[in-house]
Picture 1: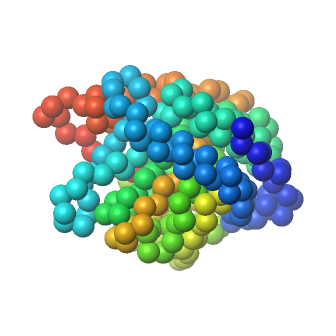
Picture 2: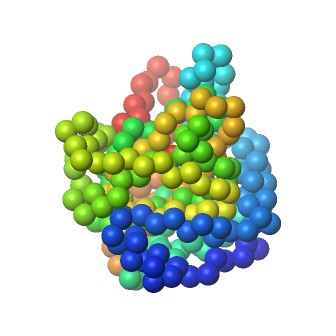
Length: 253
Ligand SMILES: O=C(O)CCC(=O)C(=O)O
């Protein structure tokens, strides 16, 4: 069993509302970080089969032709450890939402050496607004995330602006006045961020892997949309093992 972190403080909640995100350092201790590492290795070793957890690959940007795991989604039904983690995070999200939260989606971004970054965006730009008005994502750092291996970069305060536009990342015009700041994180650190908080990250051109778990929640009063979200995404952007040969699948946001 993981040791649940202490509830968020008033300061965490105030900072989250002001900035659109908040960092909770050392939320999980060394023993639990070792479990997260172990579980992620177990997940990576599980065979890729249709109807199971969703594995996505990418080609290394280092020019060595290596095939890398970029992301694994739809994890909890296939791994009790991550199910436990997603449950432990939920009450803290509830504190920020002011009501009970329900999970919407989860994934691990692997960002292996040679793995790509993420263009500046708001999470709700990925079409989430058709399911609910508001989401909070929680990042749990598994490996140290540094400037070199592509840690998260966040912008304070712009979450209040709401959704810019769906299905396109932010452009230069949108980003006028935004200050993207690097947030290096250590294993066990947790970051909560609002679905309208602009963020992004650079590719990992270092030789250090950067795995981060992300779970996203919405207010329970806005409904439980996880099954529908995955059913819709399975049609438009299925895991690699379920793809039709010759069909092109485009990652937009
Ligand atoms: O893993 C990262 O660096 C950023 C991930 C992200 O922004 C996303 O998946 O929407």
